[in-house]
Length: 137
Image (spheres, rainbow, N blue to C red):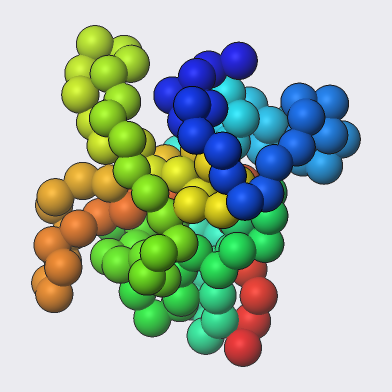
C-alpha cells in the first residue's frame, strides 16, 4: 500500500479487506492506492445541481455545488472545500511535486490542488469523480 497518508490515524479507519469490500475496484485504486481516473470518464463531471459532493469512503461532505466550476481538465474541479473536510500532503510521485488532497476523516486520496483556479480563492481542487458521491439538496 502507498504510505503517503497512512502515517496518521484518521477518525474513520478500515482494514484493507474492508476497503476492498466497500469500494469498487476503480475507487480502491484511486482512493487507497493514489491512482487517477481517466479524464472525462466521471458522471459527476457535468453535475450542476445544488447539493454536496461527499467522500465515497466515509460520507463526509467535501465540497458544495456552488464551488464547482468547469476547468476543462476532464475532472470535477472546485475552488474551495468545506472547512476542515480535506487535508493536503506533498506528492513527489511521477517526477514532479504536487499537492495531494485527501479526506480529513478517512485519509482517502481525492486528487490534487493547483494554484490556477478562478477567483475568489485562485485554487483548483482537481478531484477524481470516483472518490465522490453526490447528494442533491
